[in-house]
Image (cartoon, rainbow, N blue to C red; front, side, top):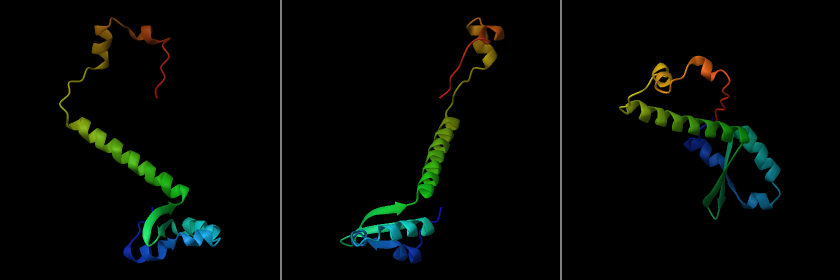
Length: 106
């Protein structure tokens, strides 16, 4: 993902009036090439346009960060884990008891 720096931030700013002047196709083409456009209305940022690919990558990175934070939290907790054999013994199960069990993981 291309990060905006101080120089290309100025190049990525467009006025919302450009949409009203029929320049939407050009703006969307620029977003595909450059990656980001900042739309301003009355000199105030109104929204940021990004390509679907950049959005998808950004969301994947966000989800990965959430999962990493959750993993870090869980690793820091003092938890007593039970192994598979102990669970099987506790409930009086054998491996053959599980042969016909269908499991759906979400």
